[in-house]
Image 1 (cartoon, rainbow, N blue to C red):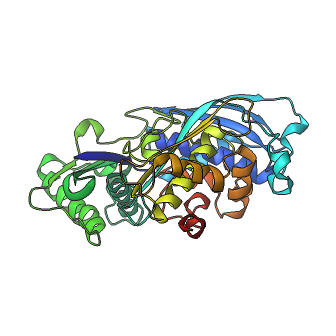
Image 2: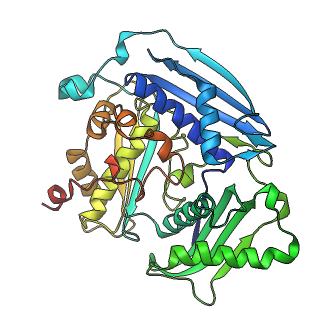
Image 3: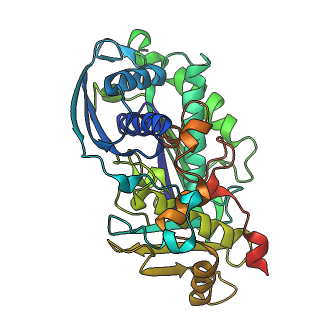
Length: 395
């Protein structure tokens, strides 16, 4: 049995991720060559933003934070967009001409001259358990979390507050999912509509019908009579949000990626512009793994890419197919190295990462900050979710 959890966009950690990525969006919308790292922390009535940046753009950090808090739905007295205190620690870096390079205009030789500025090992993963080639536990947990938010926003269950958690346990047989072992939904309640103990059974039934049953109605593997379903409105978590537990950017890496079914880097994904290889390298690794699985070269594929500071190309590309590969893993690694560009400039060029915040309505990176950076089916096809190399790999 393997379980993965997800959280709603109102979870304090995810609130921080969204504020950080909304700042990145705003910088890139106004100056696509911006370099920025933004981190955020929240607690009762307080938001702290730390950022360093090099940009021609002028950005109102506090305005962005208040907009995100309001859009997420926090309007309780203990924490809301209007009255929370926002503290910033900002450092504008000296401007230099190095950042003004357009990957779309550079030759391969010129891309080789653009080194990474960090040392990191990133991972990408794909498997054939779901339509988006994601592990089933995190796929289901994200679907439950999105539905938990939807029933609040659509006033189907208006007493639900923004903060919530979901978890799904899946039983496997020979590395293939065979049944739903357990489902957990933890929902915080609106302070003004808190229910007493006698009404908890009714609330649990409403959650089951409107969230769990709704999500699983079209799933091939459904809960059975022995599936453990746990729905909680536990009092200490009743109000939820930053007034109950603090949040921090980058603290939900497993939720951002594969629910710990596969390895992931310890580096945060949110709050970084596209020149940060610890962010965009993870997208490139996912792109390679997904195309390998879609090409039916393996049923599961984990791609590991290691970068060293000062070099343009990765120093190592390794593949693990967990015994499902049709050819040796070392041969798959060679195929990936031949057909996928893992250089920083090559990734930015392939995915058009600097322009996406201006092209996509409402920004781009903030939308990744909740419900996962990979395997998304609700945002259209993300650039690193494309399967445009499947025919090449099959040949």
